[in-house]
Image (cartoon, rainbow, N blue to C red; front, top):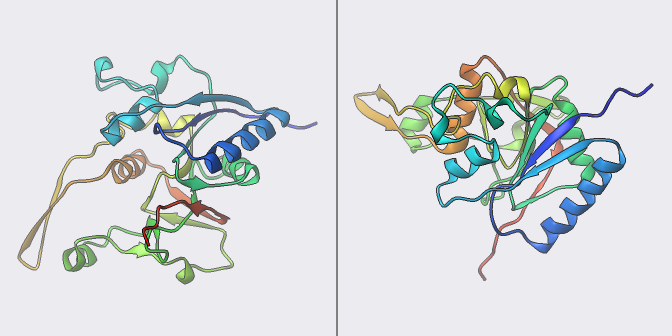
Length: 226
């Protein structure tokens, strides 16, 4: 007998979605429903990206620091967030959702605008940051091809799934993190973190690992000026 399908909240942050996105989302929703998943959709937008992400988790600045997503009033197993410029298939979305049985915070893999690196960092290498003003993004060609899942310190939130257990242990505000100051070779470095880096740091602080599924190879839709 098949186990009951998960209840999934799918977050689509943003206000503009392409025809490509509309088609892949429609196909995915139909497939998930046919397979017995219970799906809820949240779509939010703010000019301030951390607020957008917060709202897709039902977080509210008026509820204080001890709040949890959706005020604990919504039943769900998994929260998935998909950016409007990600190209995916129903099969990839299903694999991401089911991955959470073993990997409570998991992402697919897509390249950045430079077409070489993926928005993921293996470790917080401060020496590299001091030399380059950024952490060392992962070149997917350097990853062991025989290993499907890789643990990382950070990955972008373009195609990510998290379990309810994780989300209810993270500390508010989920998408902001205190400024960190480090001194390397006499140079003082004061870091301000983006919303996705902040989220990953809070996941780690809560005691969870972050993984990338390298079999989920996604497209990343970008505008090209020629």
